[in-house]
Image (cartoon, rainbow, N blue to C red; front, side, top):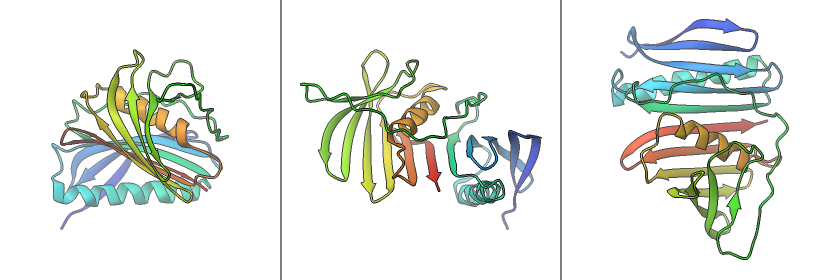
Length: 217
């Protein structure tokens, strides 16, 4: 029988750190920042060297349930959590997260005479942006570009009603900060007042890098 438990290590009025245990063995951590009645954002890091594939789904279910209950208890209107898997030494190091502006704004699209259209967030420090490849209505594909405008991956996006789901395929192995920064860029690019849910999965070759999830009530 698989037993998954989450044990708070640090809790303040604005956030918490929680350790994840599977059959009494540490397998990862949850880092959350929140404002009651407003916004919750964070990162989940799971060491796949500590938990096998069969038990991983049990761990993810418990983490999702924990975050869901916390969101309900704090009456959170918008939640955004990035889940990352892999060897803990290769997983992104968690840095204190900046709480995003709770007012969703759809960023302007700079349409010019070229075939590719760049989508960038309002933050001038952001390195990553998207260039449109094809638009088939509900299914859109983009190139993922770095700050030197090099193509480093492909982003496929499906929009159905008020839900956006997508996949990021890195062509260059992401470094320890890249996936988190790309996740923030995607959320800032696609969140809109009419969108209630955004999910992305990230991969490099045959490796699963991260999952991203945002829900707006």
